[in-house]
Image 1 (spheres, rainbow, N blue to C red):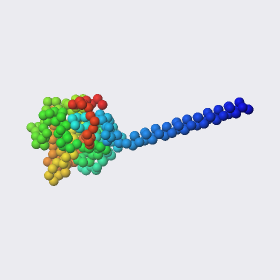
Image 2 (tube, rainbow, N blue to C red):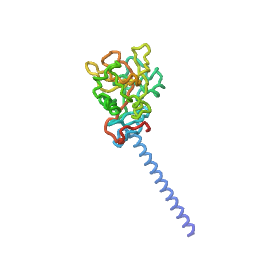
Image 3 (spheres, rainbow, N blue to C red):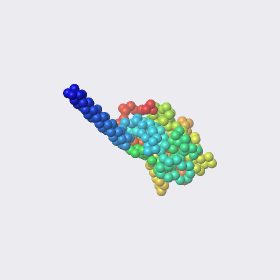
Length: 263
């Protein structure tokens, strides 16, 4: 009887130990789930520990590479956020147009947006005109910071060419900006899908009575870069252009002058 009682007691102890361990594992499992939930719900892209070069995501689940150029952290890809709609005369905030009205083109080229219709991920914004100028000047120190005076029309005489600036900001270039010719939507044209040039919005209004902003046309090296106040021509109001987003505040960065696109 004594032996049986001892064995019975040992079994009870072991069962309690197993039950305790099972409860401990269960609690650890719940804790891990909770931590994963908190991390998943946090906005890592606006966290003070964000380091430029990490990928960011928008509310549609699209991921974007980022790159540090001078004092600014840029998306290294065109924005592709928004609800797809066929291109037309007027776009609503939060919509995007896709080349040839084909949603697949947005994944290759990014979305096309009218002025102030694009929505950047939280903690990011459409760059101002000055942020554009300073970034391009950082890549090429001869790019004019008073570009609104020097390169503000379609005239080839007013374009900025530089030695290698377009090569440096294009895909494979040393800046990591990864510009590529994706075209734009110009509804006033017989064929509205323009492929020979790419224009990017700034968030700075164009001035005067018009709310439209400045845009940067980046062409092939033979045609240079144009800085255009789109309020100069009514037909430019309806164009769908590319958008790059830029980080809202100072972030941790590399000490390198120019980062490559190897992230």
